[in-house]
Length: 264
Length: 125
Image (cartoon, rainbow over all chains, first blue to last red; front, top):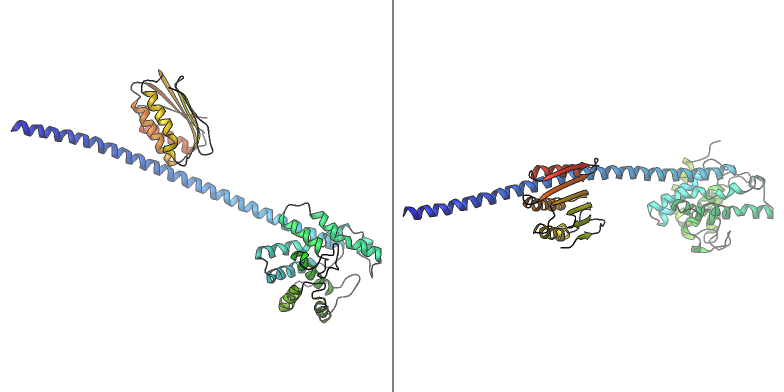
């Protein structure tokens, strides 16, 4: 009896040993897993921190690029303007008018903002127009008019090589801001929606501002005369949709004109 | 027994298992989509190698610059296998790491700590 009992104890002892071995191994495995997890967590944290840091750097660089682009574009517009002795705020007003026309026309906010930045370059081609023509008081003769009109093509040629979205947009604006909705504009006599929306918008913004300002060759028009002309030119010089937008939101345009008016 | 060579990919290391020279080298990044599947031929090769095909001295060169946690687990398994064969064979493990790569160094230290009987050299370059 005692022998049998001892044998059973032996078996149990063996089992106990096996069990201890297995649990030791399990404990070791669990510890190992924990270690792997801890290391991996630490590494992930470092990687994430590093990524965040890089991401912020990229964002800052991106902003730097965009700001530089804006500044270059605005400065180029100002150069064009200074050459033709137009008033200091003309390009700023054209920029603001263009933006709200774009927004009400239904362009995405980002595109409208870009157009605001690109539209000041519409007359950049004027830097290549001789002073004698550019600043001539009074009316142009035929030859002078022909020379003056090349500024659209010249502006386009200056900007067309760029792959930057903003400069490409500015190229379109420079090229098409003297096209007319009925096809009688220049340089390509484009008609209706053949004229890029950027061109149609800037055309209206530019003319509205130019008519309301004194220039070397003419005095400013009063509002009634401008509005009558706009109504008359709806669907002729200008995109009818944009003229409608203009009159529907006239207050906003006048507010911009007032806040950016020229001081002498 | 034949040698086993696996080319490096974007996610997996270059692996050379040379049974004639007794040199095993694993170098590069290790974050395969399925780690255990990827290393299965390597583990099989090592089992076969230590099953009567091993050279007098076996050198294992690890130069892992990036690894995910399942690779880390896999390496522990691989070290287990080496430890099991350590008594009958001379095994030298070189864990090569870039001095700026803290996690690679820490992993090497973990292996040293867990496998006291193995010869693991931490080599900074």
